[in-house]
Length: 242
Image 1 (cartoon, rainbow, N blue to C red):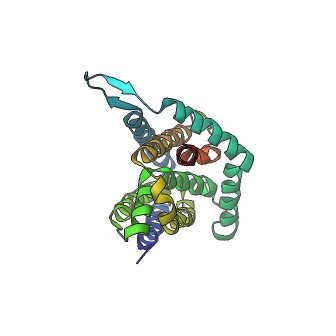
Image 2 (spheres, rainbow, N blue to C red):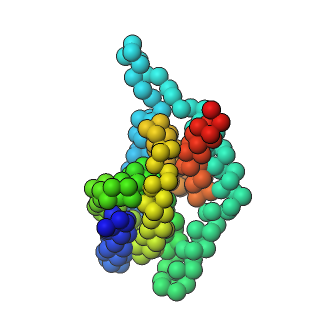
């Protein structure tokens, strides 16, 4: 069944987010604060490791060479401009607040949990690659693995940020569902280089989410989301021109 991977992924987030929200009520504030810092550090390190992995390759001499630097900068800058124009972060906040007003009145962290979890679950390479595999061949292995990871992390996120994490299943379902349905159209353009550079940009955004969770600096990660698609757009243009 095409799309089964995304359905299972969304269900895992709902289940994990609900379980974590139930745990939150019995978790003292000082524990929540420390756990949030631990989550922030974990997300930051995942982003840093993915960024370094995408930026460097081992040259013939055994030393490290950088790659994709200019396209990475170009993607982030153009993506940020496009995101600011579309005001994506504000729209995500308003969506989170809309859900909060109807399903979780009185929750002070609902929107934060919704936005943070939505970004974390959408920007990784597994979301794109897994959705493509599901759409093209019906292979759900990658999305099933992602569902397990997302479900476990949803428990932890929701234990500190509340039920808003469970509602992040909706943007994940829409995002991965669109990629799955369009897989046949976009697959020929998704070369290994495009996927690598998309993953690199996604890792940088994950790193930015970690910085936000640690309250080091408020970065509008939502408004940088279009940066993920710039490598793909760049290579499509190059292919059409050359």
